[in-house]
Amino acid sequence: MRWMWIDTIVAYEPDRRLVAIKNVSLAEEHLHQHFAAEGDLPAQPVMPASLMIEGMAQTAGILAGSVRGFREKVVLAKIQKAEITADVVPGQCIRYDARLERIDPMGAGTAGTIERLDHRTGTWERIGETEIMFSHVDQNMSGLAFPEHNFVFSDSFRNVLQASGLGHLMK
Image 1: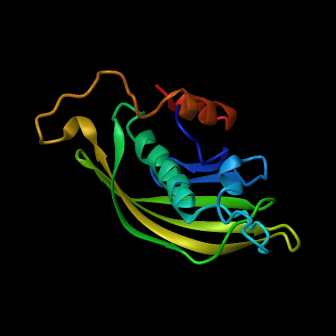
Image 2 (image 1 turned 180 degrees about the horizontal axis):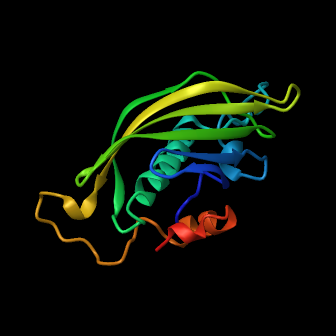
């Protein structure tokens, strides 16, 4: 099973930018275990920063994979920068905005911003930034062989693309 940390794609500019949304809900079990109630302190369910970074990596990875029609197996190689400055709580939305900085046969470099929606005001607030590098695993220089099928862009990713009206990107 692959965990998905994005719900839908709301903007796509080929070879440049991809924007995804994650709706944070109390129905998600992982929120209940993050700052659970202890003693006299009430529970404070929040979206873990590590999962927000993973959501950004999934968004940026889809962007990097789309450049070559998802023919490359794109894997996270390095998180150069990851800053999260505020919490996201159930009932809020996260917007991941990934931009392609470079791409070559060996991999891709991306930059991104993470924002949360304040439903009371209807405004987005920037709460994080990332710089993430990806490798095209079939171009590795280790001599290791990987499976022919694209194990990176699974049915879960295909479903997100289809539901977002971008199914045509999967060639």
